[in-house]
Image (cartoon, rainbow, N blue to C red; front, side, top):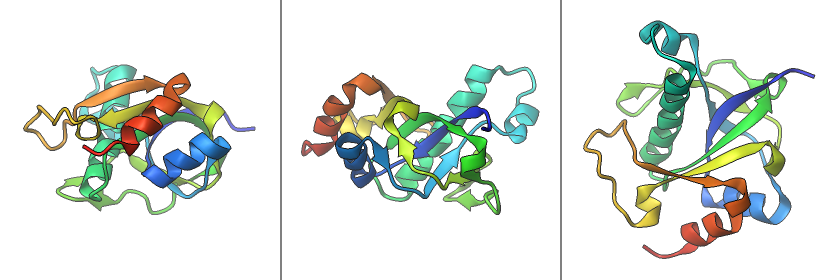
Length: 154
């Protein structure tokens, strides 16, 4: 079994509902994670700063697709990721963190947290930088609450 690595998955409401109802979500899912490019861009940075950058790229990806910003942080096996042809760009900037896509189901027990954009929470986005999205963090035990928040009309 390959070791688990932290990845960030921009998901939509259908994937969230499937996680809530069936405790897994169907692949494929775009996956963002820490890359060598992050380490080279910020050699004095630390793992936390690089992880934040990957999370932000996943959030930007969701926003640029026109979807509400909903990102799942999960630990998945590297063997379940397809790394071919993923050094793609999206929108206005290079997606140096989009390293793969998940080809296996994403199970609820793999998820560490949910990150919701303030656009979903009706709080607006206080940042003027489109690559710095304000996110709120929710534990996996708050899944029912996250589903309610994403179901509420804003």
